[in-house]
View 1: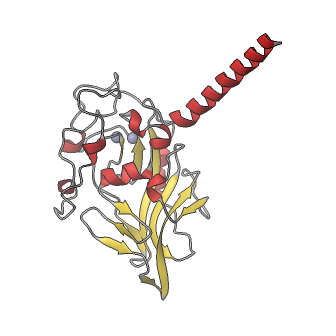
View 2 (view 1 turned 45 degrees about the horizontal axis):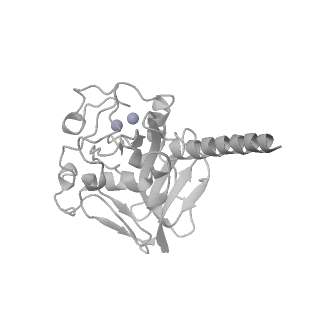
View 3 (view 1 turned 90 degrees about the horizontal axis):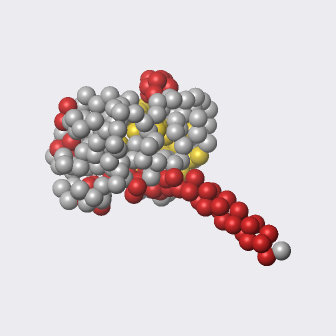
Length: 248
Ligand SMILES: [Zn+2]
Ligand SMILES: [Zn+2]
């Protein structure tokens, strides 16, 4: 009876460990996911240009393509730590209920009037980013940085929108780009961490951003990086400098 109990307990432990591991593992250091995103402003009445930074300290970044590329270089941004906040910090932007602050410091304040109605800051999420028609599956109104990239191929609209309304999903061009990357897995084309590049406003062409913002500061120390992908080509470190990265 004791033996059976131990076996049952052992199996339960294994199951628990597996569940915990799976829940916290994806995206892993081997994954390469994509998410579509767009910026929408009801005051402008249109989508805004996507973030243009290609800075990439942690492996959650963009290629000026309105996609969020999620290919963690460090265990600090895998699993439940693969968050919107990591992406926004890399882009040099912040999203708060009070305002969206764009790279360079321009702010989209909540409360501004859109066709006579007050606006609010939201991030809308479509779980099927490959076909984000209709209402979003989720509209987040606070703690935006804690949104977890828990599956590939979602779509996000970071928006100033009329209070209580849903912003539109990323437009067809963006979705087609996402569709074009669907099924892409991590491969030899992923660039290594761009930690050597100086992060910040110079990436954004304005020079007015907060100088103190150094997204790499809380990364793993150089030379002690467990995330170096052995499949990463040694000559691939020019992503930020040349913009020729082809990891999709
Ligand atoms: Zn990339
Ligand atoms: Zn990619």
